[in-house]
Length: 153
Image (cartoon, rainbow, N blue to C red; front, top):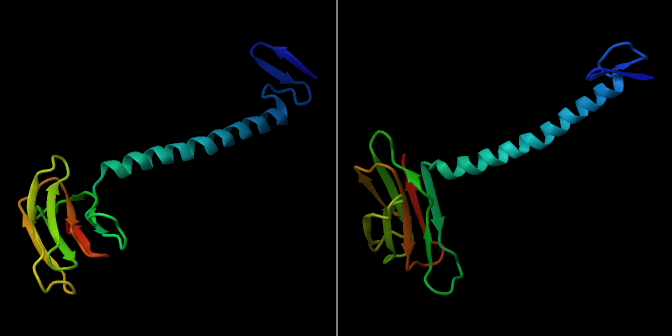
């Protein structure tokens, strides 16, 4: 039998004011329920903000096999190397592919060109120095499965 005394109830079976074993079980259940809901929610929020705010040090994209129109792709943003302030770009594909590397923040193109003949298997690589921030690579007018890689390493 429970008696109400002030803000807490007293369990007559135990004589203490914590509500007995039933109340302890309910309190533990509520804490477990809060942890079950709160932890995944925080993880999702941190995951969403974390991935959008941090640029990686490597990104690539490959053009699709079937595509109506112009085959093209754009990499994700890549942070420049913090020591050399440069990015390395490698393009694997047909000769005549158009490419450009541009600032992800303002769209300013730092290099644009066409892949020369004879680089299909070995890849066409170059490094752009004197950069700060994040950059993206873009290729268009490509063959199927052509690829561009941008690296801040």
